[in-house]
Amino acid sequence: LCWHRKMPERGRRDQSDDYKSGDKRYTHNRDYSGYDAEERGTAGDRRAGENRQRDMTTASHRHEGTSRRHKSLSPGICQIAEVFVNLLIIICAGVPYSNDGGYRDLASLGGLYSYYYGGASAFTGADAKRVQELDRLFHELKRPPYVYAMAAGGIVMIYAFAMLGLGIFRVPFRCPPVLLVEAVLSFLIGLGYIPGIAIYFVKLKEIYDNPICKEREQMYRSKGHQGFDCKYNGADIAEGLFGVLGVAVFIFGAVLAIRAFRSVRELKKQRTNEDDHF
Image 1: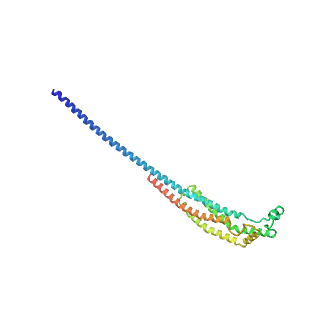
Image 2: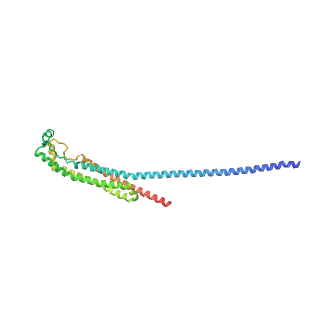
Image 3: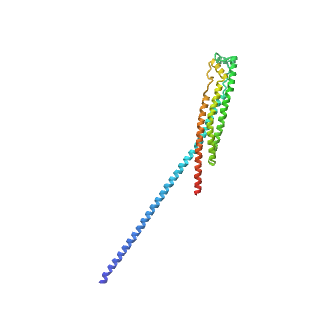
């Protein structure tokens, strides 16, 4: 009986030992599972931070690239404006140059010409010949300033085309000092417009004050003809306005060229640092 009583106690001790060892294994496994979960959470946070940093870096590079692209496009737009300004200068000088405005004595042809173009407003005989002579002399007087304006506008327009072509072929990016040369030349051209405009209007004033122009004006006015006054016409005023616009455009182009030079230099420096890092 004593032996039979001790057997359940031993069984109970073994069972309690099994329970204790099971509790230890469960606690140990639970500790390791908690550690693994914490480690996975830390790794996930690290990856999320790296992704956010990568996104921010990509966005900043994209923003820098967009800003540099805008800076590189600005000189090209300014150069196109320079071309158009000088083209308008050439047109405004070419219109009065090509129009001699000479008097045509159609009334002397007789018939319907005498009916439509004759009368009190027509010059006849010696007056007609004198007016034609004055028209020829006046046209020769006004040629030099218009030729000067067309030549200057053509040369500057060729320069603007050359700078635009260099920008299209990315020469300033390969050789940034070209931008400094462009800035200096554009600034000098912009300043050169100021004495050019002054000389242009001084020469025109001398022509309009010439006795030939005054006599021509009086003869046309005596017959009631308008538009032959010795004063600045619309083409002359437009020429001056486009000249003033050229001053602003070329000086602004010089500023943009300097900004483009700084941008290209920073970009090249950044690429050099990245190459050294890799």
